[in-house]
Length: 373
Length: 97
Image 1 (cartoon, chains in turn brown, green):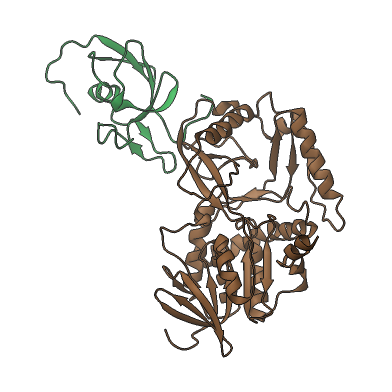
Image 2 (cartoon, rainbow over the protein chains, first blue to last red; image 1 turned 60 degrees about the vertical axis):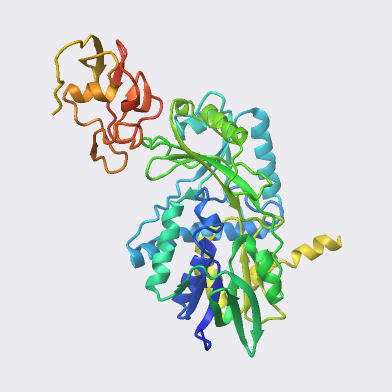
């Protein structure tokens, strides 16, 4: 490939990269989206599909506001995608629950929320602690062991596989050049343009946005940025399709628009996406049955594991390079929740050439402060 | 649709959706249901289109039925037993039933 054909090259074709590419194309930029192959690790195909607000931001108050902003933008965002593609990503925001199976769990939950809300500059997101009978009014199938829950009206969920497909349909319709099997080996900046070296040739662009998940750790230093990551494995148990019984997502359990129930919120420090730990699956299933006893005789049709994109402190990283102007990095765990922000807020900033001050708290410079302390 | 080669030895009785059918010992539930003229075993969970056994050897999962309260069992792999209660499945299953 010769010449500076693209205004911006986005590296990573998952939810973050696809949403950013769509937002950049809406700003009128010529966008190349460089992706790896179908057999490479793709966090976007293994996630729980929550658009989740409650408990986000303990330790970094602006993350709460940033998450709420995306949650509030999600409805309009899914409408825009539907207008452009005719595809419905099934976004719903009925509010969501975090169930407690003992008084101790409920107290721990209340303490976390209190600490979160006591932070200076926090945005109140209206999370309430409910007792068993209050929860049962909204979730009639809870078991007797559920002592209570926290409920946040801003929580919701989507069909994340359809979201992934919809974004790719939308970027295609907007003329984004999608380049699969273009693993980026090196990035250089010469004469005011970036050259992305891949096994399938060189791609040149005026700007570069790194949205490659855990691989940002390898790529960011090439353009004077950093992205310290700490990948984590999660496991999910999936049931057969059931008639709707659960009208609200629970942080560890949700019923999809097509009826399956997804169970699981495990965290393991492993990076092997093929491995499954049976003990983890059985713990997830056992807790799910205590929360909703009617699941006891339901058939499990599959279990799977996937690698989470996770920064070292769990909060997103949005940064721009000082040494390589025009280079940006985006890393986050919550690629579904923050999808609306990436498309509608971050992409226009990249198009303008600079991240706004609102994103300063998410700079990777925060890691140096901690290291110095 | 299906006819037995010889009408003899149907000594086992079971119920399908409350209706009694007779089968031979050693029949699979799927074989007994087909012999009794039942050609819709279930409807699919999302589009609710009708399904009958396709492979009859445990591969296609199109013959799923509820047997003695346990849902989505492969009718082609389960031998009939006296007094067995079989239910066909319509659309999505109802949890807790």
